Amino acid sequence: MSKILIKNGRVIDPASGFDEVCDVAVGAGRIVSIKNVASNFSPSKVVDAKGCVVMPGLIDLAVRLREPGHEHEGMLESEMAAAVAGGVTSVVCLPDTEPVLDEPGLVEMLKFRAEKLHQARVFPLGALTRNLQGEVLTEMVELTEAGCVGFSQAEVPLANTQVLQRALQYAGTFGYTTWLRPQELYLGRGVAASGPLATRLGLAGVPVAAETIALHTILELVAATGARVHLCRLSSAAGVALVRRAKEEGLPVTCDVSINSLHLTDNDIGYFDSRMRLNPPLRQQRDRDALRQGLADGTIDALVSDHTPVGEDAKTLPFAEAEAGATGLELLLSLALKWGEESGAGVARSLAVLTQQPAMVLGASLGSLQGSAGRLLEGGIADLCIFDPKAAWEVTPAALRSQGKHTPFSGYELTGRVRCTIAAGQLAYEAWGRG
Figure 1 (cartoon, one colour):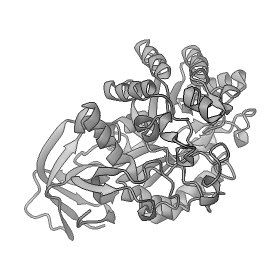
Figure 2: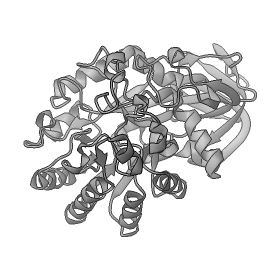
Figure 3: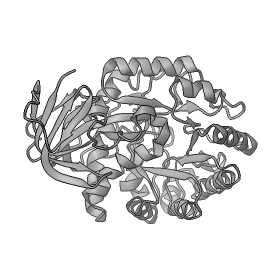
Figure 4: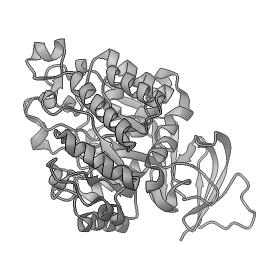
């Protein structure tokens, strides 16, 4: 394996608080040294990171790779290329593929194909129930042995509370984490957040209660079973308040928010802009403000891209008929930095919610990577992202590496450009120069 010397970069490790201009040596897939590089270290490649930030590779907890079954919307190759172009070296992928990830063989094949690409590392979520139908639990032990880091219903609400209780009891027995997006089945069938705008546009609304009712149910069952639950993509101020209270009570819950809900509101739908057709739906400004505050104060653990490539035909439809989802892997870092600057949370917190915090959510599921993923550690895995914090760029859909070109941030001017991504000690992406 190649040896790489990264020189003159501002090295930031949010986990330890390290922030210093120094050199980093990489060899045999590991970080050999930080700051004090041995004089006899002879690299095969030298990277001059002057003016750039050197940080741990990003960990994105909500990514749809679209394989198997939706190759017309995204190929594994294109989405892995998008990941490393965004500085993302680890992705958690959802199980709502076709066929659903409910069999060990499917999980093993996905991991095998991803490993052959030598780009981002893939951590699959297994289906919580067979075919996501909410009736029969999957073989969680076998799926975990095949490489699953947790179990999820993706966007399919679990209507049967007894099945959910049994799932949490079973997962809790083995120490598995259940990943749930809180949404009540019947209230969550609309296409936009309930409110004046949805009413004016004549769009079926999704009330905040769709999230809070599901949250109350989940949190009651967590208290009863002691099972660990990760709450995916909170969207409301009331949801943030419930999670804050649950954490204060010591319940074993973590949660995330998407870049879409962190920056946009229902007003951005404008005149039926289908790029804003998202799950969860964009809510009002008070909700967005609460999500921003929750991420800053630690109530919300991680920021995710909710990367969901959608084909042209499925997006260029009337708003209510368009497929929900947006491309986000390549925007995650820049939008985190934008939030950090606007909210006053700062650079360290902006990077922590993309690295150290997601690694803590994954915890023991990381296996041999636990303790070194999401951080810079001598002897730890060499997953690194090097970005220019001052480089401005315009979000141009055609230039995105993802096969999905639809993003609600099209035309936005952002700062923070990924220049180089190193995954497991290998150069996975490089783009120096202007812009």
